[in-house]
Image 1 (cartoon, rainbow, N blue to C red):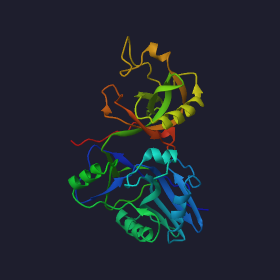
Image 2: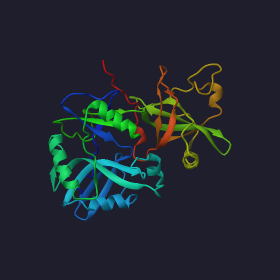
Image 3: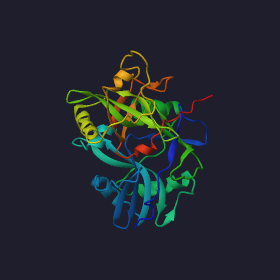
Image 4: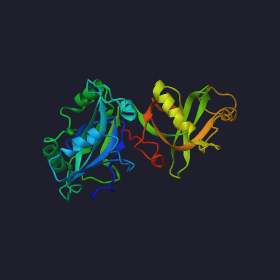
Length: 323
């Protein structure tokens, strides 16, 4: 039995810009599923952020983990689908559309090695051990990025990658905690949000309604998402929505507009009669321009379904901005 089964990944705080100074190192923020990879003898497990076992769904990645030259090891990393140019493709990952893509595992932390926990060791030591282990396997290493902040940001933007993670030198690994020792910056704002309803359109939907849970565990409406859907993604999502109907609106702050309003600005009492509600247990990743003063998403666009995140844990990400 793998002892790390109950371990949950450490989470990063969000920021508008990367922290600077000699105490910080930087890595690519990969666009995939966060996965703890565990090997115990000949047994391999891939465990998602919400504790789901993904091993059978990704046999190639499990086989790569099996090549690690250790009897027992636990890694933290990202399961990613890469195209021929090496670019991550989140939609291909969730739909298994892997004809011209490769499913890989990028490891960025070592949590346990041959029965000894590493989480109390400083990140530099964990990285050194990780390089030695991964270098003799089929697992890929998500290593630190060289260069200045400006060079790193420019290179990551030019490659079309999601963003950068800054990690503080000397920091330990804090399982299940969101820590300021890790800081993530997304170059295009994105947010995981809970789907609570949709507006029908013929035999499909026009838009989905998304929100997040506040500190009182109430679901708050954040916006309507109409763009970003491929035909395949739209059909698959509609099937999921149809399978989990709900009679009452799950959002505590709807309707949020009075009188007549354009569809993109809010939801009136009249709009409510046109909508269909679903059980709020499906999580979608949504890109957007910014949050408005009214707490709504500006120009949201669908990125994909997050199978690896528990809807009850979804909160609005608070981005720290420089003084």
